[in-house]
Image (cartoon, rainbow, N blue to C red; front, top):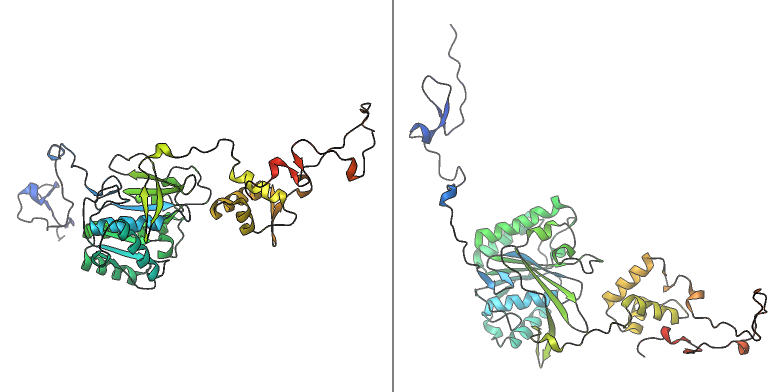
Length: 403
């Protein structure tokens, strides 16, 4: 006698009598109802909202409420200053950069991985003074642990517990490169770290700001695409602020949002007023001095300095002679070296063809030659004739711009 064969049916489903048809418990009228949380919430398409929710801002036009994102840019572009300015704005309810209103106010949690705590305090005090805020009442809480690693489970647990206890409006982590030891170029390594931060944002309704560096040679690349490492960094962000060096001491700030219109790029500068030191938007850009179209480029200035040098120069010597920022000098030297125009040696940099790099005066031929190219070339310095605009040190075009 053969026993009846029983067929396994997934929980939450039942078989109708005398049929092989399988239906859900809800369809069959069964009292067996799926447990709460065992399925994703559903709504019919016709029941979805017809009008979008009004855009909510943490800081008007700069950072969306509960957004995760990045403050990025080249080295020494005041990224940390900008992140701290946002922190002071949220903690105090005052306008960021003395211009953009804070729409949500609350505590801020900050971890500065690279700066000593006394430097963090001094910067926050200076920004608070510029914002006319009582520093002693500023609702910013600084994690004082020597390290915080997002790729270590224990550190992730402790950070989550800290966020849960404080419930900050904004979490600032500066910079991302000091928060892990994974390969930033590998999506599989970076994605879990960013996913963890997204979980913090959704679980505790806090905005998350990462400070991150630009990749080398980004130049005029679109702001988000200029970030170092995997493109996952750009894709992850809801709000992105990107800094570039402009002319003089000015910085250019680009803004991107996932779900809101972005404002046009604008200029900011680091302003010193007594003990106050903070970034500030340049309100009237019409008075900014236009760049000289005939001014030599950074590469040309570096070439001029190396052409005038009789021995190899260190990068600091080149910077001092050019009177340029170290990042610009380094980028110019890197480009010239890659092109083969400059050689890098243990004792410094020099032009690849130093002998021909210096302008050479051609001898005056008197009487005119007969065209056979056999006119003797004078061999004494007294017989050499300087060209117009030349000095014994070289042509005017190769003189240092300043000094």
